[in-house]
Image 1 (cartoon, rainbow, N blue to C red):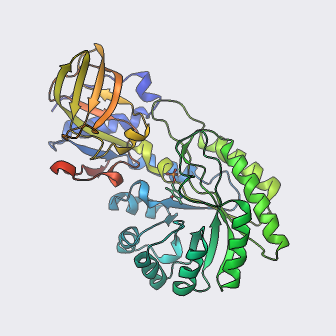
Image 2 (image 1 turned 135 degrees about the vertical axis):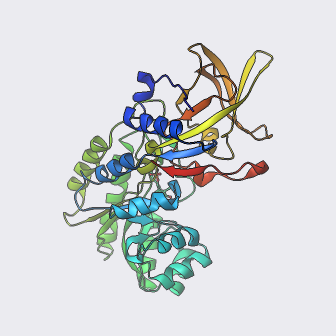
Length: 384
Ligand SMILES: *Cc1c(COP(=O)(O)O)cnc(C)c1O
């Protein structure tokens, strides 16, 4: 079908024209019914090559939860980086495509018994933790494993903060490193997460200051650390410009170089930044109504089947097939739950019923969050 889209500078500022054009070409050639998620392979490749490039001794582990589609994982696997996993499901899919356990790490500080047992059997050897209880579990299931303690660090400026769930302060982290050693584990390092979609480049500096403090205290207590795992957090463009990965990494690299021994191994665990801006949801307009002063637009992707992050404040950019007339909308998903509102007061051109809406930068934390709530199927992922 010949769908017509008007691509503006506001769109190409967010997603390269080549990616948008590839999606449109696919739409014109397919008779596949929306919704579906298109993932631009070239863009994923480009991101994987960019990440870690400006940090000395960097090893990159893709955080599988951002997008665990098997074809996406095969593509990333072919590019030679490792994987950060948290569950038996993530581990099984990686094993099914031939990823060996020496290329998997797990930075989930509290692992389920089921996952820990499976990780131990397969030979995963790098684990994070932030409690004494976890030391006891790992001591039983993975004696001698390499472990790194999770520090809590400021998450200001991250659009998807994570710090309240995991991590401990320096004092407790030091005790936990000592405890791990005493219990026969191999405490090798420190990890933190600055928060996802971290648009404040200086979050990494305060995190590294804290890590340095812990590093030196561990050293004085007789534990020689060798690994710094800086987690994920690199941002991508949704509606606004963000600091680029080279600038973020040069800043991180400078701080590491000043503070830590030259041979320190650096792990990076990018999730969002690898896949988000390679993704374009293709959705279809199923309804338009006015309720009081509000004009409502309903599409077939919503909070429950792909756009969960919109309720946490992530705002997407849209390419709408339709007229040039811009109106203010409440954008809603397909289910009957009142939670299923993607965004309010959003300015978009008015589409006709049945027209397509492309949702840019939607390759991360979309399908992986999606459920079949209310019977709407989870959109298929297609690599283009
Ligand atoms: C989710 C997660 C990541 C990935 O974070 P992004 O912000 O998507 O890059 C990395 N490490 C850990 C431990 C995580 O939980």
